Image (cartoon, rainbow, N blue to C red; front, side, top):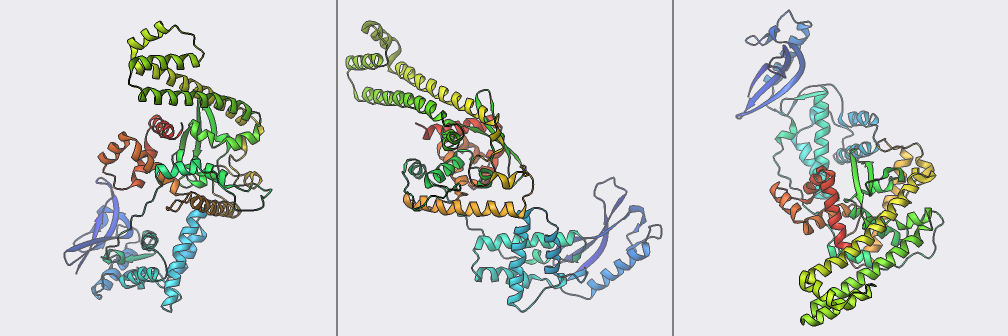
Length: 509
């Protein structure tokens, strides 16, 4: 093993830089910073000392001497070469106490508790940073596997533990000649287990009449299975929105522009801004909540949907009969009959001339245009009612009834939650997932349904039904759905809106 102190600048023309240790062993070189910044002209490389022109040069040179002495007397490159007497659990507790975000605090606490349990299993109350070696790292991973944690959880936990150790190194608390994690050559492979619902399974949820399994109905916003199914479907068709963002969604995040209903919010997990365009399908899953605020809207919507249903049935019947009829004269008569059924009093000869000129496809386009017109009327009605809601006293209310408005009056998107608010979200999410399990059972779906599977299902449906997205995913070399999902979130809004329109149209008949 050869060791040398070297001077390096961050940028080429910097006048000040850092002293670092370069260790070469078995043809492998590792460089670690000493955390000392000096003027470049004050470093004597041949003598491995800082000249007297540098302030505190004596202290710096003593540290260099001490470091080189330690390295020359050890054959264990993983040994910490400088450390305080700080212990790992002790430092974890200090770090956790200063984390403002509850989610981040819980994740760090979880890893801390796993490592503490490991130490307890080997009769240690705590472990000094200097005593952390490759054996402890591998034993910690083995301990997690032997105590009920899944392979993926153990890998993720070890990764986060490594990040914590690196944080201690960067803070100057400890220096290793070689980070013990770099000596861990075990190849731990995550088991890919991304599950999603199929199109058939989604349609099962859309069409099933759910039976309530509870005898009594709570007076306090208890979720029914029908309501739960609607929220889950809303999740899927609004870009796989996370359940926390559903829980925290307020009416004041809606707005109408150019006859498009947009939801603009800040993601609870990532703090990144997002936009969603609501389609007729996704709006239909809001009906229960809208009717509660504006009961008369149900009358308007029922009338329009009845007209839409009539047009849709006539169109389907027309298409079926045309496809089943081979005789051209019979097709003419059927087309005339359907035309008259719509209230048109057209002369047969004129109608036949139209058919001869434009053909069957032209007439189909006419009927499909009628369906598009009624869909536009329905969407415009939603625009009007959303404008009324966001202009009323209800604009600051939650859209869905997971949480009480009174407990979140002071909360604004992007802020950190209080402990009480975080517990409310967690409790209602757990309850929601229990109801999704009942939906899974009643729909006879084998795949476990959870709030997060909506996110995977959204991506899978796009992959299955949008050829442009498939080409895009392959061209980028994406190997899993989560990568494609990340890219979707970065697409221009119009592209995302168009994709979502196409997806909703598959399910909205």
